[in-house]
Length: 31
Image (cartoon, rainbow, N blue to C red):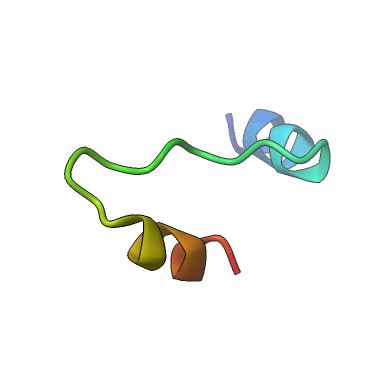
């Protein structure tokens, strides 16, 4: 549920970079 996602994000959860994603692009995605 969306409420669970919001709780995780509020606690600082971040997804792992997708396979093959350059670290520079991933850094931009995290901003």
